[in-house]
Image 1 (tube, rainbow, N blue to C red):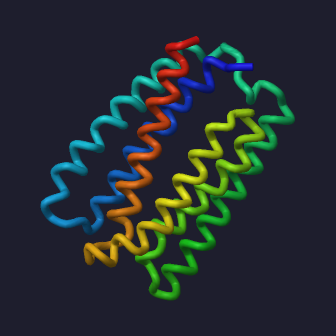
Image 2: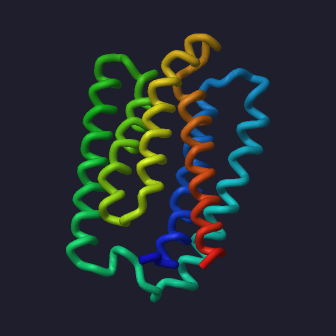
Length: 176
């Protein structure tokens, strides 16, 4: 079953988080990239705001989270994700490995989409999971090649992937 509200929430959530990742990419990119990353940030912000508006407009439509058991599973997965991300980030910062925080967060977020596939019954979340995990690992090598912070490559990669899925959510909504 397809849920209108879930697709507009994809646009809202993925758009806003894409905007956040592009913001994190500003930590230490090449100077010549800053303008383009800033411009790239505007697109998911606007898309996220459109998604928020549509989510409010369709707030009472059915969602996969209408089932209390499904909603509780969703909350468990999100809490586990935040807990693992926070513990890992804390340890990375404590042991002076700050540069690995962005890839770690992208990795944990990617893994959590494997779990959320069963919540939303949406196989495209598997693709999102694989792409975010790939971004986390690829950023480790690409950032060294460009001699910039991991967060620059991770932020650009994760921001782009999430932007694509925000657009996909909006397209799926419009096709219903």
